[in-house]
Length: 162
Image 1 (cartoon, rainbow, N blue to C red):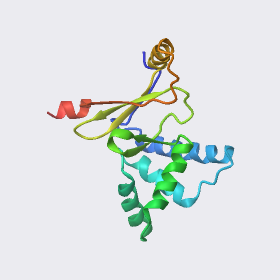
Image 2: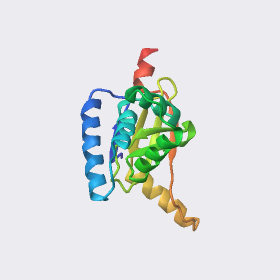
Image 3: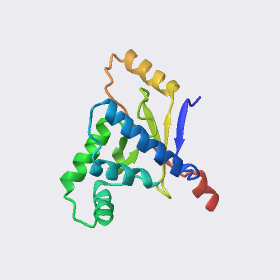
Image 4: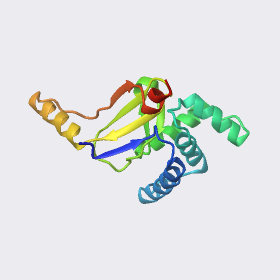
């Protein structure tokens, strides 16, 4: 049973989720005594506004267009690292790209369902999968530090379009 899921495949509540994500980011930064600078906020918004994972150079390009000035890659990487450190942005390792994290306060491990056609991502959090992984790791005396599961396939929208 899935305990929590975010279907980025579905665009209907996207704007509402972006507003909620920004409010959450602001309150998290305040609680952590971190500065949610204008640049960090813009990078966060760019990542959340897109329905597909973005690479750092794609974020850099959008940021440069929005601000009408050139932005150095290290500046973008630092902003992304800051957002990842707070759990607000997640890296999809196999794509070397980033998405907004819909479960920033979750202690569960999440897994990602990535559509091969449209490149949209569904992030799913499941206590059952977490428990199974912990059980297997325990049986192997393996000290798991982090995990990321990425599943590639075709979303319902792309499947229906064919």
